[in-house]
Image (tube, rainbow, N blue to C red; front, side, top):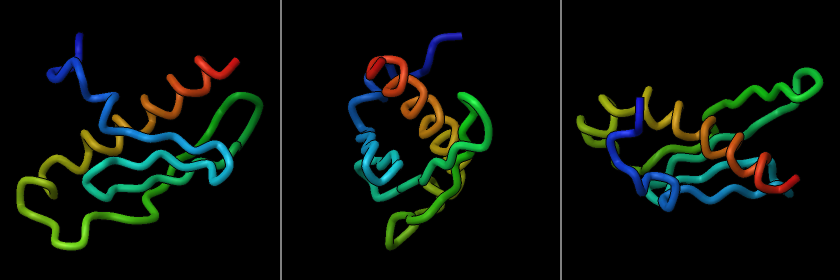
Amino acid sequence: MPHQNRNWQRRWTVDFETQTAAHEDGWVFEFTKVSDGVFDGRLIAQPENLTLEQIKNAPRIAKEAGEAWERARRNRQ
């Protein structure tokens, strides 16, 4: 199923030095390698003044972080 917003990737910045994916709204996820080619992401920062809408969208944001991380890793190789 295609993503609702085709340009969602532009809102994410992946940094391999810090092992993070950061969203322009302030969400930051850190990724740690758990086994060969498998990474686990965890939330390390969120927007300062969370709105109800942002709270409702948190699962989608977490999923996007993982997708942005994986896409950046594939494009890096």
